[in-house]
Length: 78
Image 1 (cartoon, rainbow, N blue to C red):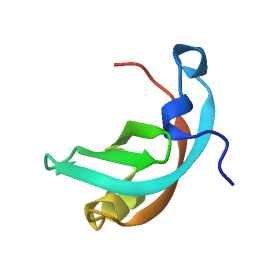
Image 2: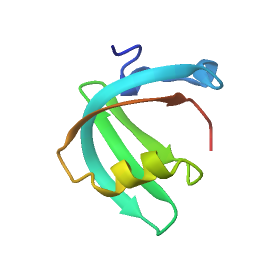
Image 3: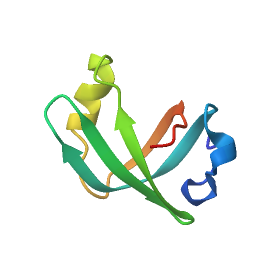
Image 4: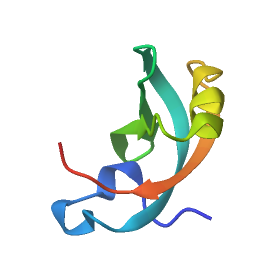
């Protein structure tokens, strides 16, 4: 179940676990690092997949534009 919308994430969410639902807007595969830009009706966020989680990395490598996904993770600030 969604806990936040992409466009509602703020600095106050850093360190908190959230669940987001939306569409893959863009995927960048840098080998052992995969990033996606995920969008919903409120905005876009960047999702980073932990390279130490082989299961998550494998799933992320299969994502394509416009796939509808749900992700749960900890909010970080770049």
